[in-house]
Amino acid sequence: MRNRFQYQIATGRLTLPVAIILSVILWIATFNDKMEVIPFLTGGFVTYLLIELNTSFALVRNRSSLPSALFVILFSSSVFLHEYGKGECLILLLFMGSLYCLLKGYESKNPSSYIFHAFLWLSMGSIIEPGIIFSAPLILIVMSQLRTLSVKTFFAGIIGLCTPYWLITGYNIYSGNDITVLSHFNNIFEWNIDNYRNIPSQQIITTGCVLLLSSVSGISSIIISQNDKVRNRIIIWVINTIGIYETLLMVVQPAMLKSILPIVMTTLAILYGYNMIQRTNRFTYIYMIISLVIIVILAIYNLMNHLSFNIGF
View 1: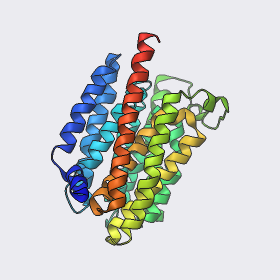
View 2: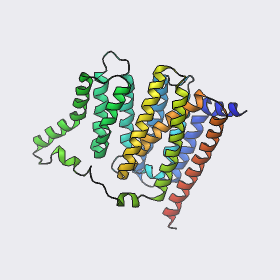
View 3: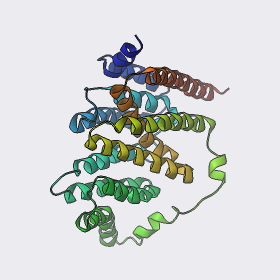
């Protein structure tokens, strides 16, 4: 019965529809501004892309919507991510494009095009959040893991990274603006202890829960992948590397939490789904139960926190 319950959740056809219904309810209950439609649509599109990612790269043996279901619930439960702000939600979409290009470059005869686009998506994200440029070394690390790092792909990446800013510089020159591209990155090295003190409690608790689940899923996925195909083993290491790197970046630059946390949620969703489908035992059963309880409590906490704040308590 234990394995059957886990199997039904991991591969059942109702898992994603139920998650989507609950997600829509959370969005409706916390709706404040019409601009929240953009993060809502972005989250929905990423939910679909996670399904396509599994289909394209066959990371698990069975077709599963569990990663998408987990992501959509976590994203919807994090009410502070519903705000459009300056467009941080779009960084998640650009990240998915970058990840897809990186994985497509694996074992490709000519990966330069994929690497160019991977860096291009990253560069576009840095226009929204300048600090995202710190993820450029991450792509180089991932390229070495996927065996696509060479002189040719390195320079293809540099060109992709610079392309948006070449276009912006050209536009500024044409329009007579004195704004330089370098001024866009003036504040990315600033660090202030007050950035940690000013983080709202719901963001700290949500981030803590996500990191806890990410740690368990990451360690377990590495152990399980030792018996998997070489290709899948490499992809699992890549997803773990991205999760660890982005987590460290988020810790060092807490001001970027809203931009990076959805990325960590995405890596968590992939690793969590991999664990639950590849292995069914007492540990995964208990872990699934505990994780579901944590997610339910987290959703209720964030919802009540949001409603009490709006009511004025």
